Length: 273
Image (cartoon, rainbow, N blue to C red; front, side, top):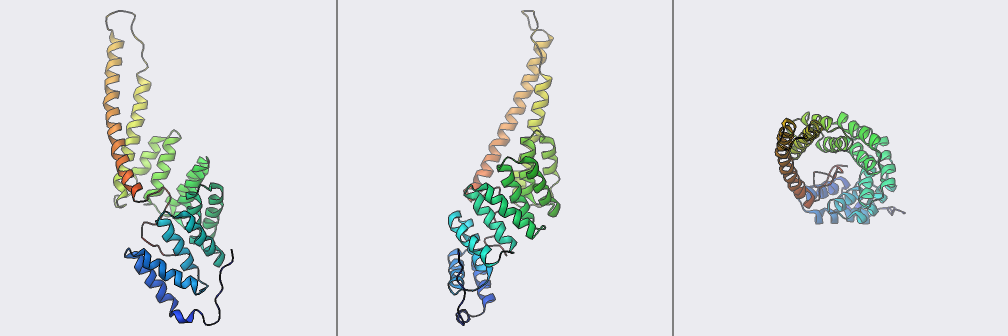
């Protein structure tokens, strides 16, 4: 895809480039995405040879769940500046939202290659690797994200779920409990997820202990009473798990309604690039 190159003097009529990008960013920050998009489009139409309008138009499209439009802008951003890490990060998001996992992996690997300190890129790389059934590589990527940003709630959540799915819920719970308390609104979701993992681990332990056999007598024997007590204990714990799951699903449901995703879509309306 060829990017329009500026003609002599064409961009000068737009005034100061930095001022216009600042105005677009401010509009996005205050929730006026339509104005932000218009200002960025004006810069693109003028043929400015700057990656930010293209990248931020892609981000705006991502925030509105328009992954097809985001792909177009972000592909142009990468063409304008092939060395821009956040353009690759955002392009990787758009590709994964379009279920183009193999391409997303390649692009996100490029993002972390350009900027190994970009925690969001490591988190997103972990997510797409997990989707591609590469759990060990995914865990390593999530851990890199957490090493770079120890309070990174989304990476911790992703890693804890992956650990639980691969037979290690206790380590996932421990990871969640090590998070600092001030992790924003996600802390409640993460706490309940940790509680759910803890109770599920206890359930498995109790199930193993409850492998008893019925006595040969018609009257209930000690084994029967032990089994009944164990079953009651399991039932009580299961009700707690189900309650926590329902609360967690409700919280996550509200996040999904707002466009939440395990990928690190920007928490701000329009991030710096």
